[in-house]
Image (cartoon, rainbow, N blue to C red; front, side):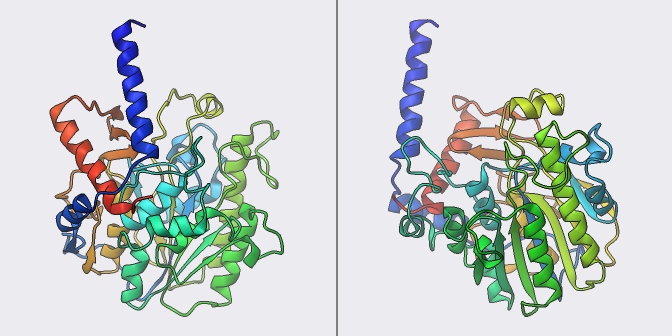
Length: 398
C-alpha cells in the first residue's frame, strides 16, 4: 500500500472510531431534524389495499433471515415446506431488503421507520448489548415515535415476545418503544436461558388461543434459533452436518406447528419478516453458493389473514423502513405524528429518499444495485449527511 493510501485509511479509521464511539447529540441539529421529519401523514395511498381493521396483528421478526432461505428461492427443496405453503396463501413482497443491521438496529429501526447509529457490541463495551438499563433508557427513551405508540393511541394493546431473558439488554431496548409489556424467557420457563424456536412459538400459540390479551392487539415476536452460529436443538436437515440448514429447517418446523394452530383464527393477521438479513459468513456463502460480502440482502415480507387474496408484489429494492407505514396503511391509520423515514409499500411515490438506502453504522448501501455509497460523490455526500444528522434525533447523547 502506498503512503497516501495508508494515510487515507488511517484517517478514515480514526474518523469512524470517533463518530461511532464518542458521538454526542447536538440539540440544534435535533431540533432541525424534528422540524424536517416531523409530520402528521403516514402514507399517500388512498386506494383500498389490505384491510387489517378489527383484526389482531402478529409480526414475526425472524432472526437473520434472508429470502433465499425459502424453498422458492434456493436449491434445497423441502428445507422450508411450511413457509412455502404459507407464502402460497399470502401477499408476498419480492425484492425487499433490510435497511440496517444487526438486531438492535433492525428491530428498533423497523418499529420506528428510522436509522440509528449505535448497534449491540463494540470493543469499547459501550454497545446497547453492553450497557445498563438506565443508560439504554437515557439514550433511547422519548426520542422517536414508534408503531406501538401510534397503535396504542388507536386503542390497540401492544406486546413483544422476545426469546431472550428479561434481563438481556435487547428486551430493555424494546421497553423504550412503548409496548404495554415485553415478555422474556422467564415468563414461559424458570430459566434465564433463551427460548428455543419451538418454545417461543408454543408460547405465542398459548397466548393467542387462551385469549390472554384483549382485542385488538399487536404482538411483535423475535426468535434466536436462526442466529449465526446456532445449531438446531430439535429438528435437523437430512444428515445434520450443516448447522445453518439445521437451524432454518428447525425454524420452519416450529413455524409450521404454530400455523396449524392458527388456521381457525379469523381475526388474526400474521406477518413473517426478519430483523435483518442473514450474516454473510463463509458457511452461508458456501451453503447458498453466493459471494455476498455485505450485511445486506433480500428479506421476506409475507402477509396472511383469512380471506386474503394471494399475490406477489415487486418491492423494487425498497426496504424495511417501509414496514411500519405499510402496517398502518392496512389499518387505515393515516393521521398520527411521526418521524418515519419510510413510506407505505403501496405508495407509488415516496417523498423521502431513504427507502433504497441501507445504513449500518457509518456504512451506506443503495438497493437493489447493492453498491456501497461513495462519500466523495456530491449527491451521496448530501444523503449521508442527512442520515448522520438524523442520528441526533434517533438517539440522545451518551
